[in-house]
Picture 1 (cartoon, each protein chain N blue to C red):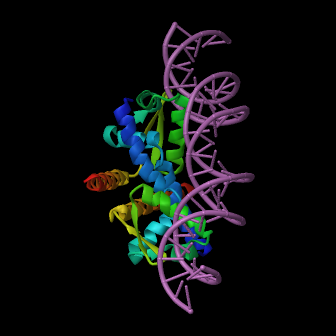
Picture 2: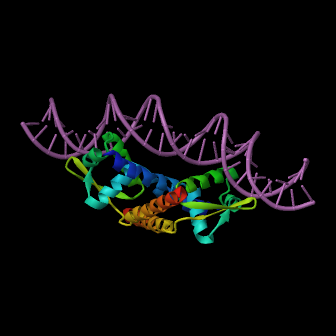
Length: 107
Length: 107
DNA sequence: TGTGTATTTGGCTAAACTTGCAAGTAACAG
DNA sequence: CTGTTACTTGCAAGTTTAGCCAAATACACA
């Protein structure tokens, strides 16, 4: 594999990795529904330490998936890219497909 | 977050994690183009040890994204879910969006 | 200025992931 | 049966990531 190809897949992987965590998927899901949320709201939903949530948000921001907007003492986050929801549709269909196969194996 | 919600996002994350590696993205990409490939072909493309490639394939298979088909001494892998390619479209648009922003920041 | 709230960052530990080598299994050829 | 090829798995590093607590920063308000 040449260096250019490798760089291409590493760049893609960086974005996928940013989504590869339950808490970060929840954040993306919530932002897609609510439009924007502050760190404290997300922290309450997730149930981890706020510092942990802040780091998750930094990962998503680093991948360019979300953007922040500081207003007063609060920081609001929102999605930068709408197509991220297609991920969920695809994941759901993978899970449905897996479930179907398992059921067939039980017969 | 209740246990059910948590389980939902963990199940999703498992699938996304399976894709969160350059070599595995390359495998998926290649399988979507070629239809099927044996381990030796993928090993040559990726350039890692065959044992490493075999493990990557096991991860993708564990997530239900690919399936294998042993014929003779060779094992062929192919995609189980076609929509995985939507991932790439979305990722590309995220990267294009990021690039655009970077260019604007340079002005 | 001093206090309280919201968020980020440093430091540290535990868990998870990646990888290559070596050894094991399976199929085929002679 | 023996050797070879294709692949998988056990093991042991090395690297990355996640999580919490504590400390630092940023802002608002009295």
